[in-house]
Image (cartoon, rainbow, N blue to C red):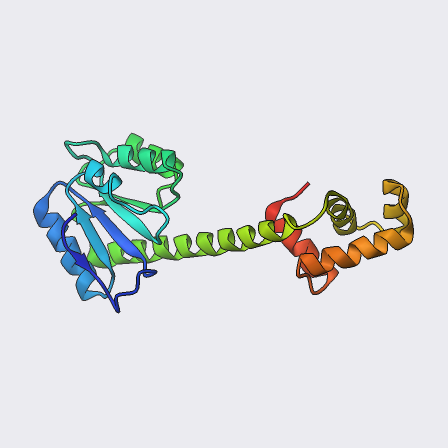
Length: 212
């Protein structure tokens, strides 16, 4: 890894990972991100990046399509194998429709031709980081709801699914073979454990996990 630029030294700040075998391009991109107040790091090859990157940290990847030690597509593929969903932006000096289609199908956020306009690249990076942030927020909310669901007993879980499906207490009691009072008690416990302020809130939380 080459130089690292930071703003306010915040570890949670997104990092733009630049991967290009051309030293001049790497340094040029680092300078671009530095003067535009974006945190960035640079690598001369995909393997160098993959052996050091923290895939759990926020950010995006700007990678050259063609490199001697593995292509940008190889980097994208390895990230996917590692379970990373970090956004990838490809840079290339060659028009390669097949590669661009493959990259986009695998989830690339953009495919930019060299030489590029700095504003176009910065816009692509900002969009990628925005998408990454939105995804992380959704995943954090899902993880929180999942932790709440894990506190439910099997019977409470059954009652919760019946409630969010629209069944009345009397119907739930009949379906589960329990008394209506027992349903009411389980329902109160579900609302408390799921930290649901209303039925609509409970439904929203269950839908986040697509629980069945």
